Image (cartoon, rainbow, N blue to C red; front, side, top):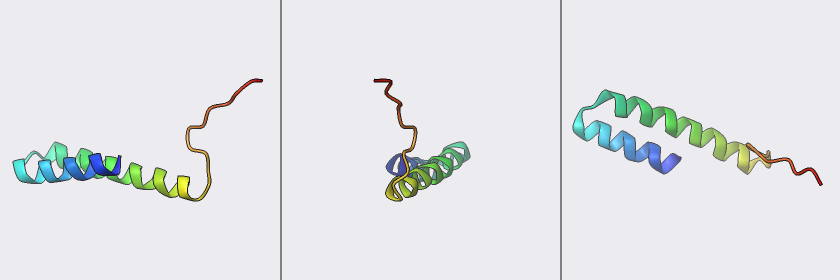
Length: 51
């Protein structure tokens, strides 16, 4: 998600589309939060197994 956010930021900056810039920032922030939570050992969107 972080790479996708950076790509959207660059494309939005080069083309001048502000919506790509905004979506890029949002995706980048969400990716960074998920990365930090995963690095701390928290299960992010984990699945429960019933057996």
